[in-house]
Image (tube, rainbow, N blue to C red):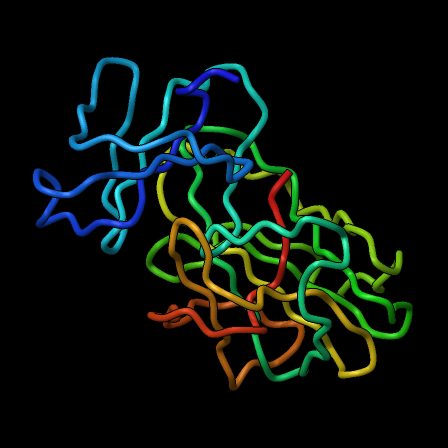
Length: 221
């Protein structure tokens, strides 16, 4: 595995960057060891998000990479918390996309009950503005305990790397999807936004903390 394919530096504050050891994890959460300082060399991008430093290598020509909110990656398709949704709530997961790429849609990890409710998925920028979304009529949930790929109305050409948010709307409480139960390795945020109307996608005030069992386990594709 190449060290700089996608590397995340964690467990430190930016203010203490020069004084604290840094643990490195790759995108699969494999611990790559520790270092006592950080050098952002040519071919890398070093970005401060909250109190965590993210280090990424050149990724030209590769498929889009995302990080699950809080760095929590399920070990199995049923590794999260089975959650019933609400038609008035937007469920959000923070991700970091480290280079320009065209994104077709979002895949949501369904839990055991599917086939009744509908999803809308959306990608939000770091200011809470939606930059892409799926059909506003919704797509019926399908595929128990598996990822369901839901396309945007048109592919989104992302040109500015940085922090983005996956948003999932569901129009009822019958069907279930998997959410993140804990904060792990790299830190990060997840939360929900109330007062939503299914069929409408608009700007939101983003979550500022990690809330367990509301951030959907999902990824861009």
